[in-house]
Image (cartoon, rainbow, N blue to C red; front, side, top):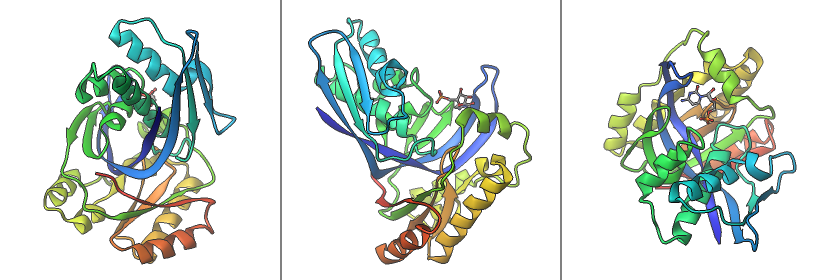
Length: 284
Ligand code: C5P
């Protein structure tokens, strides 16, 4: 079985405080994009679970979130684990704030659920994903959604009007737990207008959403990295982006465009900043 695992962008991201369990309460407007990993799942004759990816430095075996998702699925079904080879062709940048690993895990959950003739509803499957990672429930459902709590409280929203996104992953990576630790100690300059963005979305107003995009993690990045993200966002705006922001815990920055030609021009310009530049579309 072959499945696509779509990446996501955070149109808004707000951290609303640390919880007693160590996680943070979030409020995030999430959007799926066409940039996707491709997973191939193949039954094995034995009970082994093997993961291999096109990037040699990623974990194979049970430390990979895709394997964790398969284990979680069989456990929830109350069945013995079945032998499986999962091969992942990576296209979503890694450690980039685009939920690459979570989206691979979600794709495994969806594929196994389809193979077993849908024992779980999409919402039940999303709830299962919570055990694998905070972004997995959203990745199971995809589209445009508000994610709250740890990320697992999902409200599906009317789709973002069709647009293009230019996505640029600078040539450094950030550690998600490290950035969460830093955000507890930085003074946030501003917060996203999530309510305004939701109203704009309801009205089908792409410009209104794009204008309100903001991610509080930008303030938690080390100074030099923060500057790099700001340069990328400036370049995107200069090329005609309707708005620009960082996704997740970064460092990927992106801009939204309502026409393809300025988006192509922006993608061309950003190749001076990084080799990992993508021109993608949003998915409903
Ligand atoms: O849930 P997940 O394994 O994806 O989270 C990775 C790390 O990110 C957690 O260990 C935690 O440090 C941090 N995190 C958080 N609050 C969230 C989600 C993640 O503090 N809502």
